[in-house]
Length: 232
Image (cartoon, rainbow, N blue to C red; front, side):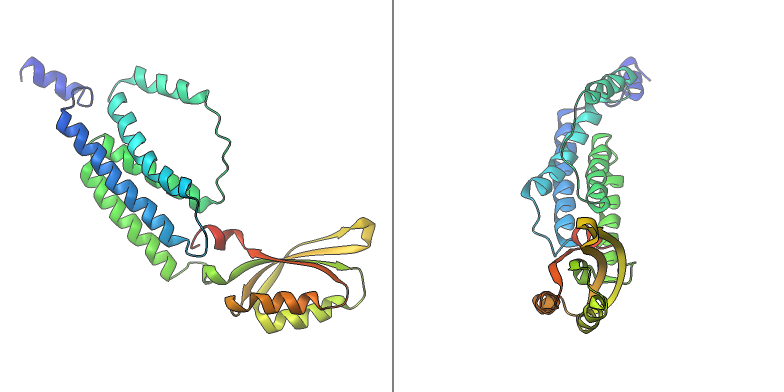
């Protein structure tokens, strides 16, 4: 083995050909786009932020570029950690589902950056199919478009819970109380439920009927956290 071959074997990522660099970045772009598309398919009940979808593609490209810059150089790796330590990220991701896709995009970019192209392609394919499978057969046993969070603020009347239960029984397949608390020194009560609606299109009827119950001050029906942000 000559000197050039030895150097290339010891530090393969510091002596990349231009064709390798272009191939890695193009592959990261293609697979990052796949990640963004799978993310969009996995949350059909949400109007997604264009910035989030674009960021997944850019994360794959940036990760690939970072890995090519670092290579096998430990000093560069520690320098990168030090540089990133001064950056403060204030954007809060909405759920573990979003965080999972951020790591998905980073893993794709890292695999492309270290020239593990088979790992990148096969890994993206398997994870994408897994996401689609989780949407078709949700592990929680509940379709994400039927899961909601229901909040009711009511006056502290006796018997009001029974009337609310009758209304919810007509529109809600399953429900469980997440939180109950008093407001205004006990004058009002606030109940927060996680519910599975019988018909997602009948949400307006549920709101109207609950709002018509005497003593109900406010009703808020929102997507539950798991339903809004992943197939769960």
